[in-house]
Image (cartoon, rainbow, N blue to C red; front, side, top):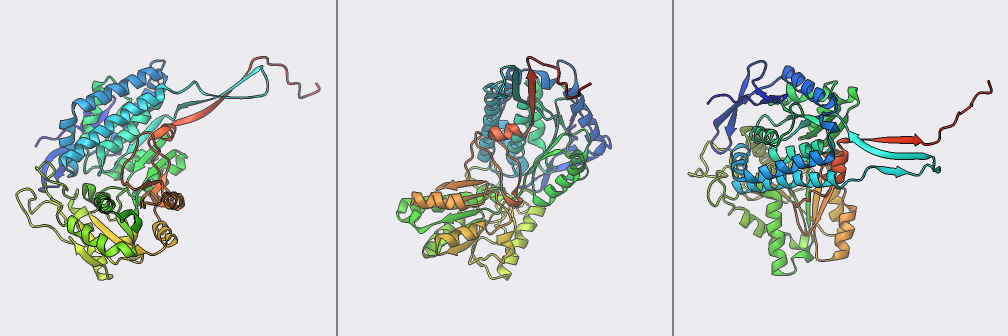
Length: 502
């Protein structure tokens, strides 16, 4: 394999200054299938310098283009994404381990995000007029781009998470440097190529592939970076915030989750209701092998329903077809890395030692042609009779592991759901509309789904409470993250002030 030049600076692909490279591993068989440049601090400095010049340049610089021009470029990118859907979906599948159908859906969502932010910035007004109480004063609040943005994305949804940052950043008139995860960088490389094909000027988009330390660390602390947007784990997020603090930069963090899926017995009063709730509990926990920040990894089910619900859930979980993401009939792919597999095994072992009851899974599957023995596969796992003192209930596993807790009253259900240091997302299942509104209103989570789990809308903000992060992505607030507000006060009839007698 020849190494790709995956560092993009001022419109050109290049190698790392150090010459270092990294192998990209196929998680389905643990075989390297690509080699990328392994950047460092010097590469970040070059990329930030290019972004700074592209932002601060003259009349033709990106922030001084019209919103119509920026929107047109975003729409061209959306079209190119749809054109390359099959190629990008397969690349995302091989890079991150997810099924190819999940990869295709990701590409669709990415195209929708670019189109949405194109429409949003096109339809904005010219500012908010502020009544100054005088016909001789014109006062207006306008929004301007923040500047150079450092965008750091995770390994589980490389293309999707990059789009949630890049699309609004460009729509608002910013320039950027993006660092994809060192584990899954390839679809972001492809996205940068599409931005160039769409006509984005040199220096506006820049990318440095490499590890969080030194690449992400240097991006976060760099004095010419104005905003840092990070999606990833809590430990890394706190490091990003600490590094950005001396420069008093704008910081947006989308961190972890330990998300409750609360099921009231009345939601399962009919066979159809029961079947739907079980099916959605499986989707909540096991989509992309549970490697989702919003995964419904905590099932909190009413005690009277528990045994019937968990028995059926475990039965179906055991039938989920594991294998290489491009394989026919495969429903769930491998974990992304050997480290993630080992972490998942350790969490399950600790849960069983602490008294959890294994209802399904709990081990690596038998190898087949679709799932080689060397691949990072783990069976979808249901752990019953769990409680809040268990690590597997408190901490983010990021693997195909579902814990089961029970409640008797509505108050107890809310207390259990909120008893977490995170607050990203949660679900409520009930046939009672009043209860649905009450419980959803009391949950301290950034997104609450009622009788559903996992859908998101580009038009709706995505954020979290507690240690799930700060700031917002998607929706108008997502665009606002990449802007600064400026108040312009114009006196149309100025007069001398004469504060002083002389």
